[in-house]
Amino acid sequence: MTELELESEIKQDLIQADLFQDVDWGRCLFIDFPTFADIVLKDASKLEDVQRELAKTSARLLDRGIRLKPMARGAWEIETVRYAGAMPSKSGGIMRGPHYAVTLRCGARLTRATVGMSKDVEETLASASRMPAQEPERTAFLEQVVRSLVAEWLSKAGEVCWDPIVEPHRVVSAIPLRFALAQAV
Image 1 (cartoon, rainbow, N blue to C red):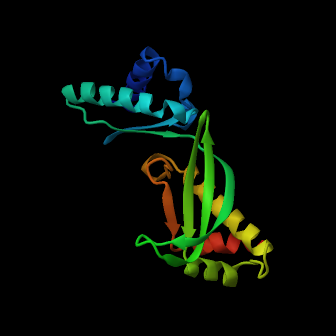
Image 2: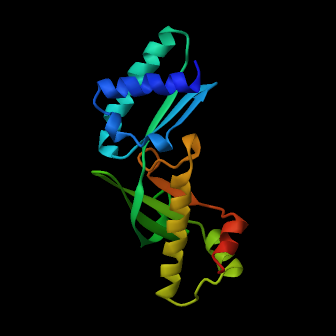
Image 3: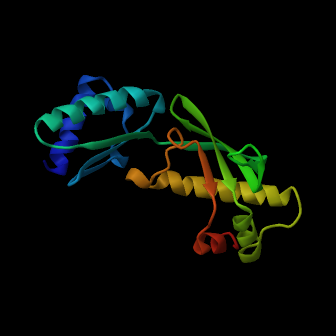
């Protein structure tokens, strides 16, 4: 099955399910081997419906000997990034480093996620960039760094794109030096 045939098959199924208009087709990705489809939605409130249709498409293709690995996700937009205190640990204690509440929207669906930043990342930013030493400028600077990181994660395609529904809590334990240096300007 070619990429165009796969795309056509999925489009036909989503047309029949009245979900075609909810997909941002320009951002979708289709790969013929291994057979993979990344379906990006304009409105994540339709996510479960699209996932159900993709499961049906996968089952039908499997009957023809084609193993499809589909994924559906929203085209999330960042609404807010706010400092939320110290980062909690899995055991219930507090870790070193700040913690941020992120609100995202995709069509009618709103979701909240959290991004923790290790103290090492904060220290790297302090030494490699122009991070203010005083509050509230320091917090505003770090909120902007988190906003930039989230935007980068959401801009990826396929399996490397961050899906805040699947992974609502993310920790930044290391930061690429190129990213830290970009904050210096």
